[in-house]
Image 1: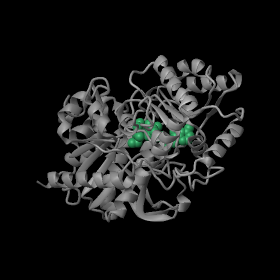
Image 2 (image 1 turned 135 degrees about the vertical axis):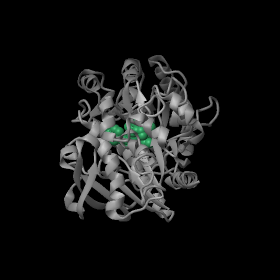
Image 3 (image 1 turned 30 degrees about the vertical axis):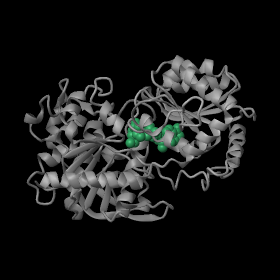
Image 4 (image 1 turned 45 degrees about the vertical axis):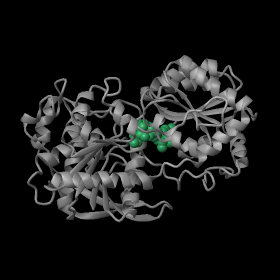
Length: 491
Ligand code: ADP
Ligand code: GLC
């Protein structure tokens, strides 16, 4: 099968969240199954042209009333698991006016760029025009999140009779239903698909253009990144206003759990760790813990060390953690937070780090090596997300024997098994309602288990480390969905 993957970010080139992990890793596993898969993304400033090759000519991208814009295209390759070049091509759409910036969506933590509407409509249209430019005839075009949600709309309208793209099926993966790409209705004149599509079933939502809604309506098939989240978005509580269209298209909705990159996240070979360990021998994990305490300036004592690595945003329940922390820090535990995001959170946790109790440390910023050392050195990992489409950090935690404490929603509920008191069962600790009190209670339960049921805690660690959520499995599920979508489109 020929597959075109379109995304606003992909590792290792540009990343703000889990979307980049999926868009940069899944294609490699599709390739391993024998498919011709290619990736399209923007060339932001952080992508160095020196590592790329220029595709000859200019790509003409029609943008309705904006006119036709001319972009350069540069080509690179995704790395394989060992960091060498794989044979998956990546096309970078290079258009200075839209993507010649330091940020992907905003300048460090600020509001979204004012032209994000045109920027990502442009990316979506460019991805399709690029097929003509490089002579690629995809069976499936796979779009991700609101940024590229115009792709299914375009395929279903402007490209219906296109010789190269008219038979292509479209897939939309919703990694996060909260971000929808809502813009002034005038964007219809840039999309240029005809105002008849601006109606409440398709693209219109609260008088605005809603790109995600349009993508869900027009995709041949669509999916979320866990089965549980696929159910949840059909409800008012988790649908972020789009539960109606989610229900209308429920028959074509799949839930496919993300994998993680077990080559990168392997405690027995992880180059970021001071000592290796695995499920048969956890002694290296103790070394990781004391070294992490030293690195963070925490007292080197054997007390439960609780970690968190996160975007500091509402979704992740960061405000609730802040509210629960004073009581958590009153227990004989230590706590480390690595994250970046909302300004209040930087102020709050920065101040707590400077002036608060000695059992708390925060690193406000982005650091992949430190993320690895936190996953390895901690005993417990806290992830009380309000909603979580899949979540990757709880999967890294399981792999590193760091038992997750999670809110039982979405992918967190699908991947963590709750501990059963008095047994050695489970791989983590779940809270079922989400308040500062329930966070404190569940942390207390986990800490109590660490202190008083050490054999149960150890057994859970070993079980957690043996769990597998692989891209091999996920890739097979995606191929099933692609196959079904192609058959549907051609019928
Ligand atoms: P989301 O995509 O909603 O942020 P996920 O759990 O799917 O949540 O993915 C988050 C990804 O970003 C993980 O790979 C995680 O390790 C990484 N990450 C988030 N914040 C940081 C940070 N401050 N430093 C290093 N890695 C981070
Ligand atoms: C989104 C979700 C996260 C998911 C990631 C990758 O960022 O918030 O839960 O793991 O996408 O699919």
